[in-house]
Length: 140
Picture: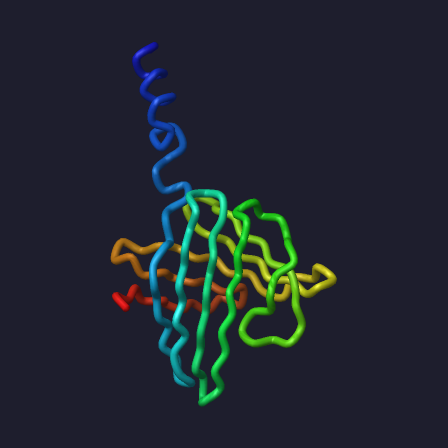
């Protein structure tokens, strides 16, 4: 029993599950009827995640960067998807999936998404309206 306990202390991923906060770092692309969204993610272990998005939808170019603490608490943040008003965002891992909450400046939840890293390293994004989007891993 002591040997098992020592192994769990020395290798925390065995105690908590290696996928409790998978590394989403990389470059991805979402293709839609209106154009493409390029996503760049840089993750600092289970502490922070930075999500950069650039889009060219129907000739309108937007870009944004969000640095989010992975604590599940709403923090002031830049607007998402080219909206004019700054808002708040929260991010946390739940059962190996990244949960994002986007709120207005007053804290009213506007959108929730669950991001799951797939075996092929693409990301499946489930939105609160039930729709699903695939962000494909790119090499660029």
